[in-house]
Image 1 (cartoon, rainbow, N blue to C red):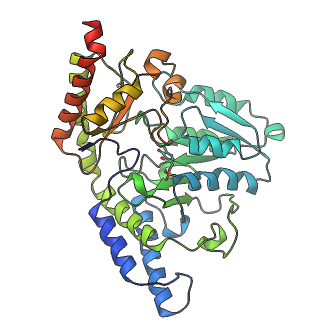
Image 2 (image 1 turned 180 degrees about the vertical axis):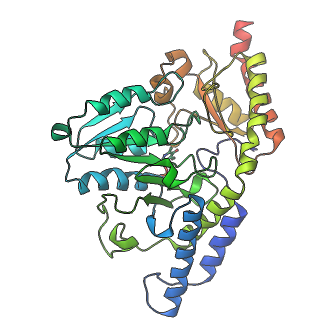
Image 3 (image 1 turned 90 degrees about the vertical axis):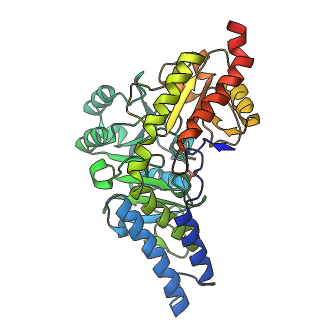
Length: 381
Ligand code: PLP
C-alpha cells in the first residue's frame, strides 16, 4: 500500500510511539495528584509542553493541551469572543477548515468572510480596506481567523502580514497552524497571531490530542469547566500518553523539517508527469505551498472516481476536505479560489510526509495514470 494522505492523518512516528508506551508503562496516575506517581505523570505532561513550546519558539506556559485541532480552534475563537463579552466580529477566511468556520458560526457574533485571490492566498488589500473602515463601536473587536497552510491545497497564507494589519486595527488573530507545524518553520511570536492551534496527528503524533498557544495576556475564557486543569482554561484530566506522543512527534517533526522540504523535488517531478501524460491542472502550482502536498484536477474525471480507482490500486489519497467522514463533495476551497465546477469536482489531494519514499511519488502517478487511461483519457483519445 502507498499512503499518500498525510494531511488527513500522518502515520505515527516511532519517537511518538515510544514516548506513549513509556508513559503508559508508568502505570495509573493523575497528573493533578500530589503523590509521587502523580508528580511523575505531571513531569511527562510538562516535558511535552516544553517540547511543543520548543517546536514553535514559545514558552511552555503559553501552551494549553486540548483534544485536537478542532477543540483548539473552538477554544480560541469562542473563548476570545466570550472574553470580549461578545463585542466582536469574526473575519474568517474563505478557505478555512470546517473546524474553524463552524466554531465561528456558533460563536454568537457576526461573521464576515476574508476573500482569497485566484492564487489561493487571502486578499490582503481587501482585508486592509475593510479594517481601515472598521467601526469599532458598531462591530466591536475584529477577530481574524486565518490558517497557515491549507489542508487541501497546501497553499501558505501570509499570516504575519494579515495579523499585523489586524493588530493595527486593535484586533486579534487566530491562526490554524494544524497543517503548518512540522512542514514549515512555525514561530508563534513571528506569526504575530494571538492564538495558534495545533494538532498531534498531522505530524506523526496520536489522534485526539492538540494544543493551543496563546499570547500571554490574550483575552481567553474557558469553554470547558471542571477541575481547573491547564490553568483553568481547559478542564479535564490530561491525556498523559497522548500528550507525551505529541511532544515527541513535535520535536521529531521540527528536526526533520529539511527532510520534509526535500519532498518538493519529487512532488514536482510527479506533477510534471501528470501534466504531460494526464493533462491535469495542478492547483496552486505558482503559489508558495507545502512541499508534501499536491492537489490536482482533471475535468471530467470525478474526484470520487479517482479516489476509488486509486484505492483499488492500493494507493490512499483523498478528495475535497478529507477530514470530513468519507463525504466527497465539490471543494469549497477551490470554489473560493474562483475555480470552475469542473475543476472543483475533479480535484484530488495527495499528501506525503516523514515516511514517504521517493518511489511512492512514482507509484502514485502510475496508479493515477492507469485509472485515467481506463476512463477519461480513453474517452478523449
Ligand atoms: N485544521 C486543519 C487545517 C485541518 O486539516 C484539520 C484536520 O482535521 C483540523 C483543523 C482539525 O484537527 P483535528 O483533526 O485534530 O481536530
